[in-house]
Length: 499
Image (tube, rainbow, N blue to C red; front, side):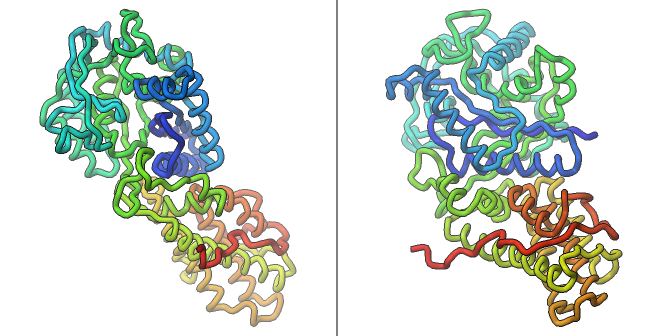
């Protein structure tokens, strides 16, 4: 059995989930669901990042302890992911004792290997990013390039990670493809960073106490980014369960936003090398969701509440729109109007109507007895070809292409009905049985490709067509479902006027 380990970035709990964070979780969930459908052993890890200066400041502003604050805000993410059908296997919180233990063991290994040294640091710090920047990286007026807020000069005694020692090794790993980056053009971006040369970086703080304590110096806590990255090892038992660790590492797929690629593509692999373990095998880098060309974020006024959308329509409608309307790795402009239009066109009209129409014809013309799937021939070869295209697209982390293939299968199946016109034929007619059998199989296979995006509705589709489960991921002549009955529409059409 193949193994598939996928992670999201752990989400910083200084605000509620927005569509951008939901987008990352939904993509990772879709990939995990596809690999489960293939029969792979899957480990899907997500969670919340709960340390750092921002958290301490937010807790102070609300008059509560940092732990009380993160208990409340982390619960919002946990609840949101459940509502959006995020099928995670583990939810890491960086305040958990297991995570503190892993962080201390991992960074102690780096320290013992001679790659952490004490020093004094002065740098330009963005509190919102929890990151230092070089002056050359800032916008006009000394502003953070991500949050466009002024940075702060900070000075304190720190321990430093000797990042500069790994420049050449990291270049070799990316040039050889030992660390893969999807989409590929992001690898060139990483190599551009590396060829500028790397500087040693601060990894501890003395100015705050809210973090994982440095085991060899009680006056320091680890910098939040180092703490956060190590969650990928916490989930697989690093330092505690060697057998489990070796079972899952380093064949991991880290899904992350393009704004945090530097941490994941440079710092994290270097940390792994310094600790004496292999670097992660693949980085899956998403673009940004844009509203009218501007990035959606917690600090802006252009947020779209993913839970409000899911409650109005369904989590499936939101998931389908986000996965189908953007090309993975590229920025995508989104809007509620386009989401509703996509729901009506693809889910309500094309897919929903096909399922309802097919089930009704089977009840009307075949007495509700599901037809046998015919042999694959030239008349339906396109369905098998589209299934192969969609399968390949999922394996290559191209969800929009996989869903496009599925919808082409839906439209092809609709055209078979139009060409055969079973409603004009007598009950029990052979061509009617052939057509409805072929269309039913086309819907089943399309549902397989769609299921990572619309997991709730997929169960309804299979039920309406008499299937107990998804079955094989290729054309399966001869099999049939159970007795069918008429059912309510899967996707009620939305009224055009939303005013």
